[in-house]
Amino acid sequence: MAASTFPTTTMFDWYDRHGRSLPWRHRWPDLAPAYHVWLSEIMLQQTVVTTVIPYFLEFTRRWPDVCDLAAAEQDEVMAAWAGLGYYARARNLHRAARIVCGEHAGRFPDEVAGLRGLPGIGPYTAGAIAAIAFGRRSTVVDGNIERVLARYFAIATPLPAAKPEIGVFYDAILPSERPSDFPQALMDFANAVCTPRNPGCETCPLAEECAARHAGTPESWPVKAPKKIKPERSGIAFVAIAGDGQAFMVTRPERGMLGGMLAFPSAGWTQDDAAYDADSPFASAPFAADWRLAGDSVSHVFTHFSLSMDVAVAGIEDPGPATDWHRVRPASLPTLMRKVWTVARREV
Ligand code: SF4
Image (cartoon, rainbow, N blue to C red; front, side, top):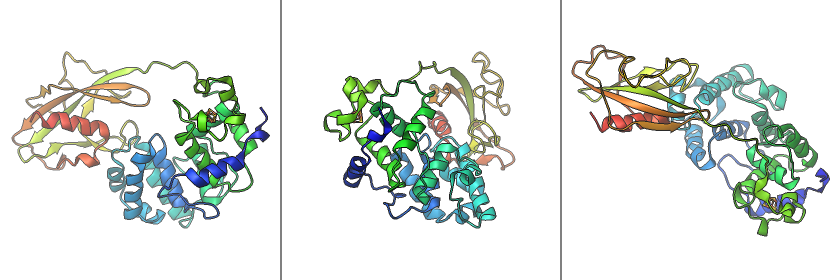
């Protein structure tokens, strides 16, 4: 189907009636502040809108502009990010804030190439910021937009190979009017109507020309390459609790899983760890103590693998030097470690 057949006016009509109000969103001809668009887009990578909203509100309350965020300590930013996952995003966020504040006088670059030079900003995020904050006619194709376009045009190439092709369709239908609203309209439409399962074709304003709807099996698009089975890993976390309730914790290396986060010592589950041997579970304990295994283990799913983590606990009479002992604040822990703490505190 020719891209020229896409009914952009219908899409804008739908958006004007049904588009979501979101704390970072403005409507054309108003453009949202680049700081807000950037922050929300980084938070929304791999995370749903309802989870992001309270984090966005808290970040913008504590750090109202990018230079406030740049001036924060990295530990503060990491702790405020805790629970959103994918912690490299938070480190890059902080680095990017320092570059924007220090090298660009607090102003974000206003086009894709300049935005791509900032840490943590890939092609999608650069396109989204350029379009939504600066009104540029840039390519903005996330998983939601992919779904709508793959269905509407019945794109037969499987994902992810279809991404460039879908980008070409997007560029072809991108109107010259309301460039900041267009991707947001498509995203909201994908969420509300053209959903992954049970798309609302019966009442869809695009139904007349939608190729997937005419084929009778809209859920067959986007075509997906066969799924790889997620590998499973196992590991162990060590929770030592002193008489005053403080726990032994370490800051994880900057690079790698949960990088830079305060966490319980653990072993066996990252690519840099030696494999976990359940027959000698305490071999990699951080120090000698009366370790015992908790009755429950923790399950957690990362993008690339599933993890089953045993939890070793020990009560410590005399914790020694205080630097590594911390009052545990679950809200500041990465989700995996929050689960570990929940299991451990039942035992000690
Ligand atoms: S008709 Fe169905 S498949 Fe096509 S765009 Fe509308 S909701 Fe999506």
